[in-house]
Length: 192
Image (cartoon, rainbow, N blue to C red; front, side, top):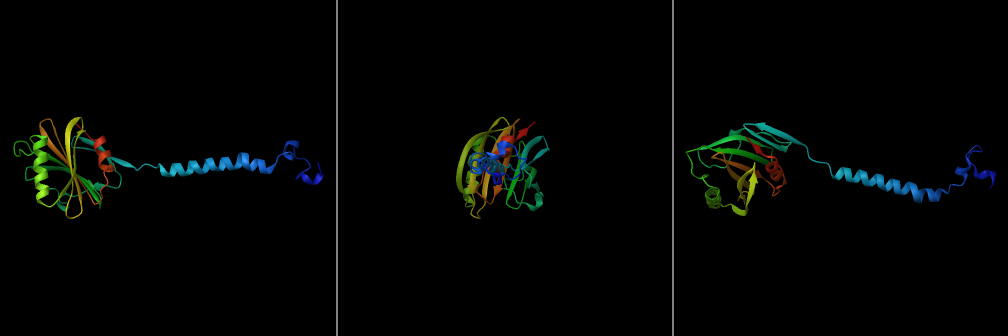
């Protein structure tokens, strides 16, 4: 070997024999690709942060950018004076209202099929279009869900269930057709 090849005359002999092209192809480039993949994946899987609502015998997870809304400033679906609003949470685009049907005053939520028929008739008469309906489970009991798009462009998803002989309605209102937020809320929803 020529003396000019050495960067330092005290360099170890293994350093003299390393081919920098091989080092780039076999070590540095794969390591850079792995680092870039990890950075890209970690940025794509960032989970939205949630808050926990825990009051009035109810616990569930909801988006951290939601706040408690004032009932008088937010128009709920008018099911009659026999509805007690337990809470309203949301932001500028989305709101979740939880309502209790006061026992003995309203037969609308006596059975889930009766409730579905009454809500469907009421919203249809107001020009809303039924998008879907389905059976599901909320807090361990059977529930029924209707999804509408109103003439003003809002999407309404009304989920009703009967627990301990009392009817409850979760009304989800949004400016978008997105349902993942509501699904996450319903999956975490627990009542005493």
